[in-house]
Image 1: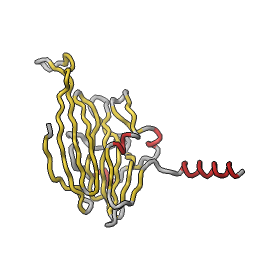
Image 2 (image 1 turned 90 degrees about the vertical axis):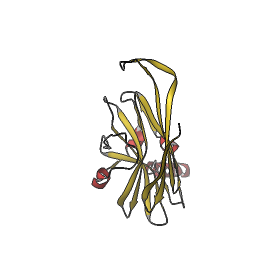
Image 3 (image 1 turned 45 degrees about the vertical axis):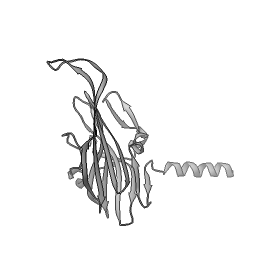
Image 4 (image 1 turned 180 degrees about the vertical axis):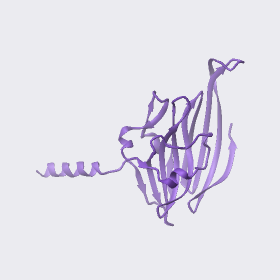
Length: 205
């Protein structure tokens, strides 16, 4: 009887646990690995997507969240969620009353593909302040991805652009390169009063 009661309590607790991480520590410690464990690659849309268990906890974008153009590299794409929702991977509330969310959602890419977006939003008393794109993971001839860290009040983003396709003079694809061309751009932002302030941008290689 006691064993069955404990088992029931465990099931009850698990069923109401969110997959997202909520912290009230003195600083934020997020990386792309925080999101990676929730993803799988969908060949149909040639993109990473959230696993089904994560999609159930998705939230509708508010009018303000949809209207605010996020900072960071968007490659010219309209940052509109395909289903109008986002999933909160992690949350952090600091001692000054600012709330930060690490979210992910999918937007439309080229030729019926999708693009997975990882983004950081800031709020105060429930009101959106700012947003910053951390990664857009997709392939359209060139592979685009990023490695990022959010640590304390500094955001570092390394954006990778990898091109392994060999073109003819007329632009047709004829083969793949033995060693892909890789370009890396590093962006650094400072988090101050809920704002993401760009400190630097440079090409690493």
